[in-house]
Length: 323
Figure 1 (spheres, rainbow, N blue to C red):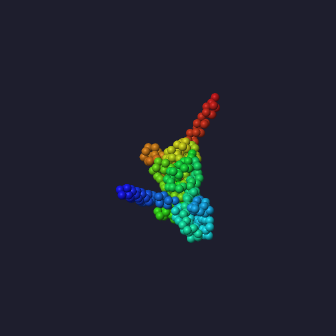
Figure 2 (figure 1 turned 180 degrees about the horizontal axis):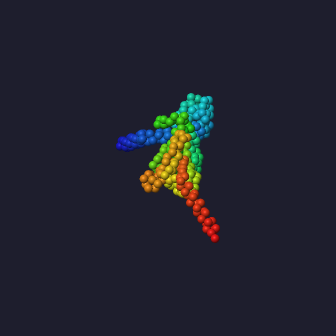
Figure 3 (figure 1 turned 90 degrees about the horizontal axis):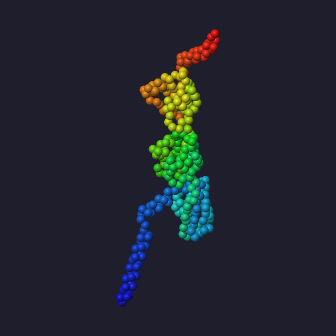
């Protein structure tokens, strides 16, 4: 009798332990389920993506297929194409299972994996070491994209332009209010991006353009007329020094800067007195890309220097003629 009771008690305890263990396994924390769902729903299928479709216990239906230009896929033994673009892997797997269930499989188990993500890309062009198109499968900062492209090369300037053209998958996030027919262009300074002062989350379809060195034009009464390549902010005085200084007859009280007006072909004229800048009365102005620095000639000084030069050149000949 005691042996019988011991056996019953042991069986009861073991059954209770098994039931409790099973309950623990079948009921994972809600946070874990939410995390797995978020990971699964993070990427949405786009045009030209390569998909791996697996139908368990039906290996003849397994297929590797590319999303067509119209956003659909055509699977074995299905009469109609299925829309794949803008769906998650889980959503598309569910629709494929429903399609096969309606045809001939009682309880299909389908898995979809995006093996090659070709729809979400960011192009990096311009003065970088490795320009090209980069396929992305997560969120990237602008600085990360520059790093992937090898960073600025020797010809790079000071500015980065980012053109937001829209995703090739044409999927719109809830927070994305960009009109698909419009292209937004954003301007950044290279140094600010490198130092983390400015940043931008990249989106599929973005085009990053690292501009070449900015150009300043200097002409007139300077010793070396021409263009000056600028990779750092430069002031008017620094530009004149780069032009090897002023000629003797230069008009220092009227140095003109011709600056193009935004959105127009016209230029505005800014006049500075170099004497006031030298004395600290006026701040040395910073130049902008494509500025033209024009140094005028002081006609009176030019005449006087011309007379002086002629006198200097005639003195040796007069001395040579003396008896």
